[in-house]
Length: 70
Image 1 (cartoon, rainbow, N blue to C red):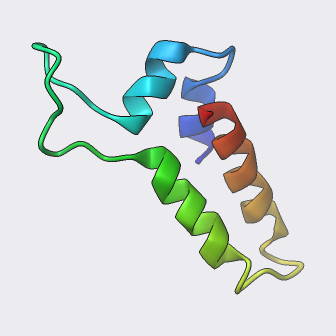
Image 2 (image 1 turned 135 degrees about the vertical axis):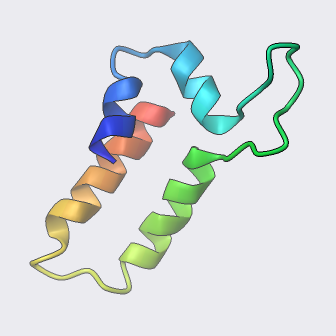
């Protein structure tokens, strides 16, 4: 999560867009494209089911990463 967050620091629009939708050199959507933003959003939704004092740091990192992505 931290690595993905660091990729988008300083509002790097190109990398933010790449994490939503990977495209080929021709500009077409890659068939193996993966939407990190949606995936991390779903992870946060599931995370609150297991939230406790020992998992708090992981939740903070997911939220920080999502904020940088969008």
